[in-house]
Amino acid sequence: MTTPRHVLFAALTLLGAAALPAMAHRGGPGFEAARDKAFAEADVDGNGALSSDEFAAFHQALRHAFEAARFAKIDTNGDGQLSLEELAAAPPPHRPCGPAAE
Image (cartoon, rainbow, N blue to C red; front, top):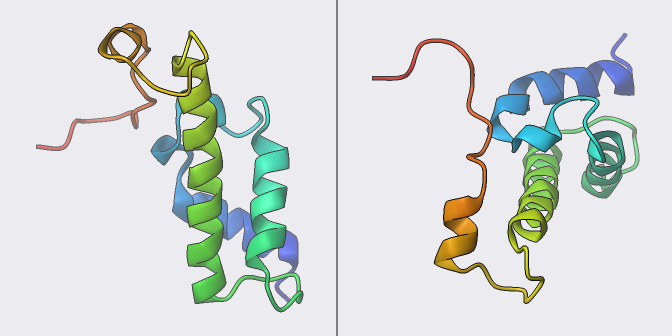
């Protein structure tokens, strides 16, 4: 039997933490709260599992949450805009480990 936990694990495996900023790794600050919120928002029929369409919404919501967090971290002067200097000073986003794609 598939439980919501199994579905969530499969979704996160497919999503791949490498696609998210470094702070979004499993267990990172805010990850569980963002994951749970995105899951709840995406599970529109409330059955505790994600259909293919719901998974797409889950992925989009989770990615948006971490992009917003990364933007806020890079926006060091808090003006709601990123200058070239802020972008240049920002650490690179997390990249997957292993051989580089050619």
